[in-house]
Amino acid sequence: MRRSALRASLGVFLVLPSFLWAQPAPTAVDPDSALAFRLQAIRGESLSLDRAVSLTLENAVFVREAAAALLAASGALQSERGAFDPELFADVTRSRAENPSSSPFTRPDVIIEEGTSASAGARMTLPFGTELEASFDARKTETNSAFAAIDPEYRVDSRFSVRQPLLKGFGPGTGSEKASAARTLDGAQADHRAARLLAESETEATYWELYASERNFAVQQVIVDRAEALLEQARLRASAGLVGPNEVANARVFLAEQKLAAIDREEELDGVSDRLASLMGTRPQQHVRFRPSDTPPESFPVEPIEELLARAYNNNEELLAARFVVDALAARESGARWNAFPALDLTGSIGGAGLAGSAREVVFGGDTLLVDVDGAYGDALNQSVQRDFPNWAVGIELSIPLLLREGRGEHNRLQAEVARAEERVEALRRTIEENLRSAHRSLGHATNRLAIAQEGVAASLEQVRIGLIEYDNGRATAFELVRLGSDLAGAQQRYSDALVRAARAAASVRYLTAGRTRHSDAGTGE
Image 1 (cartoon, helix red, strand yellow):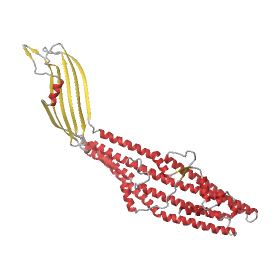
Image 2 (tube, one colour; image 1 turned 120 degrees about the vertical axis):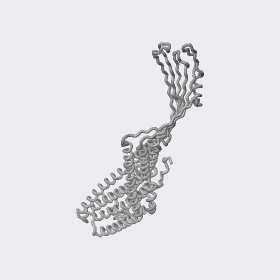
Image 3 (cartoon, helix red, strand yellow; image 1 turned 180 degrees about the horizontal axis):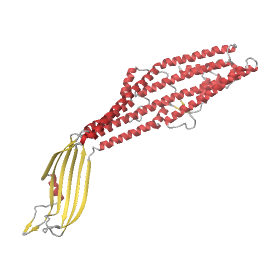
Image 4 (tube, helix red, strand yellow; image 1 turned 45 degrees about the vertical axis):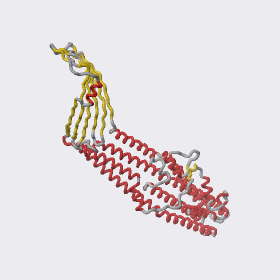
């Protein structure tokens, strides 16, 4: 179909009188020769569609931006998960204090007390807000007091404590940020996939636009060649007295118009090449433009619109990303709902104490006293762990901010944000449906449109054939003849545009439905 249309677009130039063909040989051989000659003469770097898509996926700014956003979302989720990681802690303090004695029973007059204290343990927060902590507190005390029964003295306290929020901070009140970060990561992944699909779709559409622009430029150059030949013929006829000067003027005007049109077509071709280069992030190495080496497909399968819409609603990556935004906000809203309550925490702890050291005699009055204590840090630690001297505690803590405006205000704000995000999802869904129906209509009409465009080329060729006969018989002017040639070129350009329009619609359908494309599995990490 495509090849026959290209042949038809040049058929007019083969039936011109032989004296019009005093031009380079390549323009007078077969129906494809003039266009083929001009296409070969266009300079540019050959580029395949697969290569163009690969470069775009690698270098497109919006694809890289989506990849960076994905890394940021992954880091945010890692940070939120870290809030629930176990934490080890420890500290050591060395102290010394000198205090004057104020008691007649205290000797010497200045009491010196040196101590070393240390604490260590682990704590963590569970996703439901439960705070757990296990710790040891140890202290060594040395003094010069004559009434100190143990010197040095070792004390160790062990404790396991629990704090469980019952209202504010319970469940989603603590884990909402982690849940929101997880949904945000899902959305970033969907955005990244959508960016890659968009890169393929935009590159393919621009590639076929470059294909059409190159052929339109080549056709326009052929028209310029023919206009120059026709002007020369008009001058020869005018010099022989066969036509008047008006014929020459008409041919000159037509040639000027077509040369200007050729400049426009060349600028359009370079502009499309520049847009493709911007997408790919690279420019031709030794030429001013890229040249497509592939040809568009000639058939475009059309699936039922209901199936395409169902696939788009379920698989469109942009729509999925918008839904994940709603989920992320909903997770925060759920946490804010719990955190709008007063704080009511259940607390509890169990533990033990240990005492060890070096007992020494204390003389008080006429008595000599000695405590039954001996050992070092290890002995005090064993007593604490085995709970030789147990302790426990349980309690309730309540905190009620007056009016509760802060928590309720945040909850109301997030409720509104969820509602806004849901409306954005609905707006996006409607836009996707509108665009998909439009692309589906283009595909549905593609075959018929191409057939009609091809018929237009054939009809235009017949008009030129008849016009040439009338021109030879003196019933048509050179201006009318070149206008018929321009109409034929326009018909060919409309056929090319119809072909590219169908290819664009097919690419749009694949993007909107997240359909499988040539690079859909590359670099997605899935």
